[in-house]
Structure formats: structure tokens, C-alpha cells
Image (cartoon, rainbow, N blue to C red; front, side, top):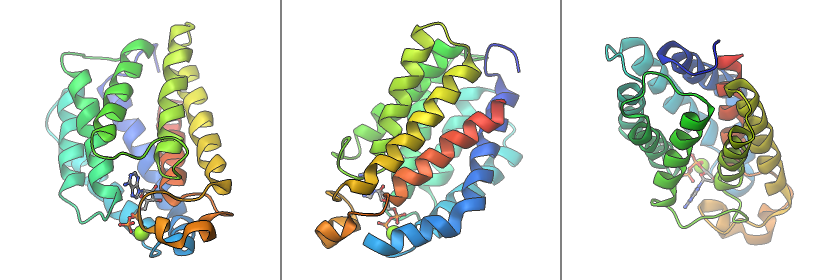
Length: 211
Ligand code: ADP
Ligand code: MG
């Protein structure tokens, strides 16, 4: 791809994320069986199936409209704790994408920051609470710092994906302070958080989509 994410690149990114989640959904459910109810993989599968259908059927040709449509579609799915947060992530991204035909590294950073801000308005969970935020926050931070340092979109997304995966892995030693896993207290230690793991996979998929 060129130096910026266009509509078709965004479609590839979204498809890449869906593909990555589909491949790993059994692992995600297994991770959720330690501290939660074992449904995270099937919930994520439902979300990415909806995402893909939306991408295939969307007739809107703007980046912002597609992101908004994807967000609302995911919000409409029965998605436990994950669905609403993921839906708001995409609708938040759409807000900052408005008016852009393509996104260079700086604009892409702004779009992801807006998605993160939208999630932060829905939950009080922050880094260290053993949730998806442990992957999402560092990914967005690293995306911005790579962009500020002059990285192109692919390099910036590569760093962001690595940060998301490292963030997800870092939750292994943490005790859950939000969601169902909070109920099991110290027994949540020893396994990475399912939501953080799926966020790591999503970012790997975004990268795969532009590579
Ligand atoms: P449910 O808990 O409804 O079964 P899922 O199993 O789909 O939902 O998702 C669980 C994941 O959702 C957790 O691993 C965590 O990352 C994330 N999560 C749960 N509650 C919150 C919250 N309040 N804020 C942020 N993330 C959360
Ligand atoms: Mg669950």
C-alpha cells in the first residue's frame, strides 16, 4: 500500500482483524474459562462475523461511514461486556475519520486515539486492571509515538501490534479488577486476559491488512 490508509486498505485491515480472531476464537474462549464464563471466543466470533457482513454489504464509500456502520452493527450484537466496548471503539474512530479520504500515520493515530477515548468513556478500567485496556492503551500510544517519529503507516502499525501483544501478555501476572474475572480474585493470576488477548489479535490483523 501507499503511505496512507485508503478505503480499501481499511477494508483489508478490518478483514485482517476478523480473520485473526476467527483463527484464535477457541483459544480466546479457553482463556475466558479461567476467570470468566468461557464465551469470549464465541462473542468475538459473533462480533467479527457482523463486522465482515457490514464490510461486504456497506455501500458507503467513506472511511468514517464504514467505521461508524461497523461500530453500530457490533453494538447491535449480543456481545456481553466486549460487544459494547468494541462497538464504541469503532464509532469513536469514525468521529476522527470524518472528512478524510485517506489516513496517513498522524491521521491514523488520531483515529485510534478517538476510538480509545470513546472506550474510556464507557469503562473506568485503565492499564493494570487486567482488561482489554492493557493491550489497547499501549498500542494507541505507540502508534502515536511512531507516527510522531516519522514512521510510515505500516511501520507504525507494526510497532502498535507488537505493543498490543506485549500488553496482552503483561496481563498474565495481574489480578483482574473489572468484569467477571474480578470475582475470582487472585485465581485470575497466571493467565492472560481474554479481552486483552483479542485486542492484540485485532491489531495483528490490522497490520496484516496493510502489509
Ligand atoms: P463477559 O464478561 O460478558 O462474558 P467477554 O467474555 O466477551 O464478556 O469479555 C471478557 C473481557 O471483556 C475481559 O477479558 C476484559 O478484557 C473485558 N472487560 C470486561 N469488563 C470490562 C470493563 N468493565 N472494562 C473493560 N474491559 C472489560
Ligand atoms: Mg465471558
